[in-house]
Every structure is written in C-alpha cells, then in structure tokens.
Length: 42
Image (cartoon, helix red, strand yellow):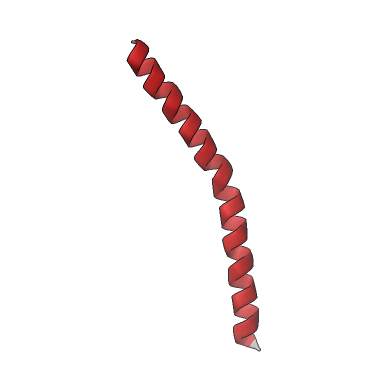
C-alpha cells in the first residue's frame, strides 16, 4: 500500500520536475544562442 503511494508520488514529482525544468532549459538555450551570436558578431 505505502509502496504504491510512494510510486505515485514519485511519478508526480518526476512530471512536475520535467514541466518546471523545461522552460528554464528553453530560456537557457535562448540565452546561450544569443550570447554565442553576440560573441560571433563582436
């Protein structure tokens, strides 16, 4: 019983972590590309 609840909580935690980190990853990629292009132009 407790193991099933722990598995559900773990799955929910993983989904939340993925949803939370995706935007940060996208922003980091955008800033990374912007800084790279800025360095290239400079």
